[in-house]
Amino acid sequence: MTDRAVTKLQALVRIPTISDRDPARVDTVAFDRLLDEMREQFPRLHESLELTRVGTHGLLFRWPGRASERPVVLMAHLDVVPVDESAPWLHPAFSADIVDGAVWGRGTLDDKGCVTAICEAVERLLEADHQPAHDVWLSFGCDEEVSGAAAIAAVDELERRGVRPWLVLDEGGAVAHEAFPGVKRPVAAIGVAEKGTSIVELRVEGRGGHASTPARNGPTVRLSRAVLRIDRSPMPARVPATTVELMRRLAPHLPLPLRPILGRADRVKPLLARTLTAAGAEAAAMARTTFAVTTLVGSPALNVIASSATAGVNIRVMPGDTVDGVLAHLRKVVDDPEVRIRVVERGEASPVSPVDQVFDHVAALIGVHFPDAVVAPYVQTGATDSRHFTRISEHVYRFAPFRMSAAQRRAIHSYDEHLDVDTFLAGIAWYQDLVEGLPE
Ligand SMILES: [Zn+2]
Image (cartoon, rainbow, N blue to C red; front, side, top):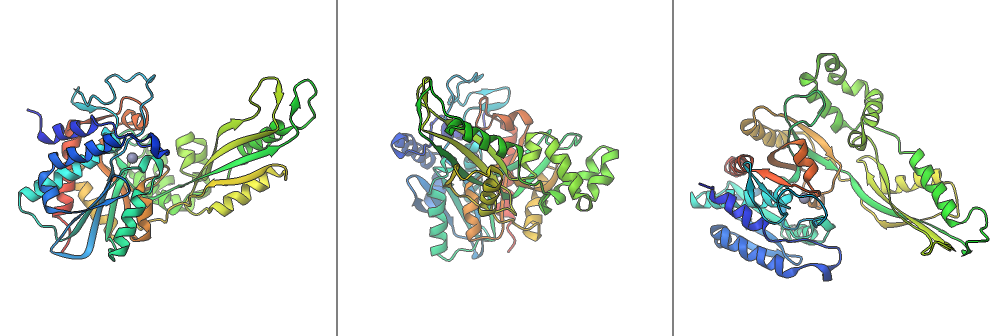
């Protein structure tokens, strides 16, 4: 028999709540349906918890505890990224079909698995007449995938009410299988910081004209030179303290020759930085601020010289770097006053949450439920809504209590996204224990 929680997850996945930067392109009816469905699926939660709507369809619930000095915020988001219709999904993206012991569909991993698991954990605890030791808040954004404002509105509301969370837990890390070459055990990676997302536009203006009489060094050429210079001069690689700690914790599980080196990662930082930048795109992104030239625009016609050329550069800012510092680096390497650099979006790296007793509390609970995993902190390269919560809490951690294979992690924002049923049920139990075990 299918567990009722699985049926609930299927029901939420089947509603295509796709967010969009353009509000006019958002199917608000789908979001309305999702909120109705949640009310239906989690009746006790909706009856017992106090609800504040944030943004268009964001939800902020408060579950009053026996005390409120050490409130906890459990986060997830209701929206999903669009589906590329040409991608070869094995099972239709909004079918939520159960095949080979997994629920398949957009949003199963990102992030309706967490939404459902958190709500089901609360529902079960309410059925058992549990009251948490401290206030538990549930914050579900509706526009996380488009860096929307719902999470900011939730933080504003909490700030207005003087809530200083003891712990904020959002998506991000997971119990990652096949995460590090050479490490056989899964790694329960807890994101303690995330890189910032900034976007700049490079622009060169010129005379343009007929393609039969080109002048030397026109806008497209100057722009191309700037793009090449950026590509050839990356920001210096650095190994932040978080990555040193990650390596230190992984060291005992590495093949013998590597153990002593990574065990004293703090003393071989330059070597480690070089190793990471040489170990592929994913590892390199852990060691420095990155630049990705995403858009290139020149002339609209094959026989017209561009009178302006632009390039979009997507920047992921490493904790420790600042957007101003990154802009100074860009100006220096581009070294051309004709190339104008305009900031389109400015996002600093998040503060780094400490690896202290609150971290240990979460880590210990992971140890109980996933005894085979090595628990370690890491710097997340993607962004989550939780970055806004660093304004009101020192302890913001990014971890979803689900086992994920390398293939499953690749499926996020791509195709064939699926969450194993057993893993999903284990995740519910984890959230349940987290709430039940809050220290007095
Ligand atoms: Zn997400």
